[in-house]
Picture 1 (cartoon, rainbow, N blue to C red):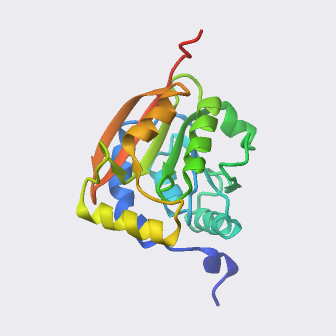
Picture 2 (picture 1 turned 90 degrees about the vertical axis):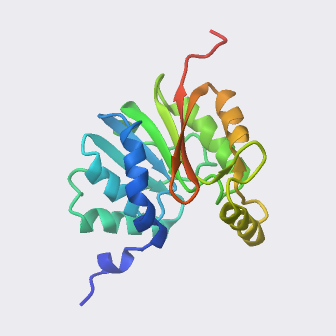
Length: 215
């Protein structure tokens, strides 16, 4: 008989394809200790994979969808990570300030969002960036993965087709311009953009929290 926990686990095909390259890219920019907040964790497959790969950090998964949070918690139990990894946090990027548990908030070193920027209204990216700037310490990193346009152009025909399909599903979605993301980050002291090319025409971009120039 299948247990309720097994029934709660969701499977997203893209996760199995990209978790290796994403993990390899994270090796270069993740802290060795502290907490990492993942925004829009989806099924939770990425979260448990990266908690195992980076055991020195506390990986806090989150998602606004209650069924996704159930899936995340089911994956945590399935992977026997309950003693190491906190339960999923039901978090909507638009509802600020974020209700972060104290252990996560105090030790927060990085915020990660995988495939959020293009599959959400632009206002979600703006809220994510602003709250990240307020939550991260100096030197903390905001890390974003997905497809981006560069200098106003798609980087591949497949990304252009993907962009069109996103906008047909929801007119508020779509592949964003890298320069627009850099600007909203720069405006809230998330600077020193680092860009890594990943398979399937995706990018890993990260920003470091800097001291305000107004001080």
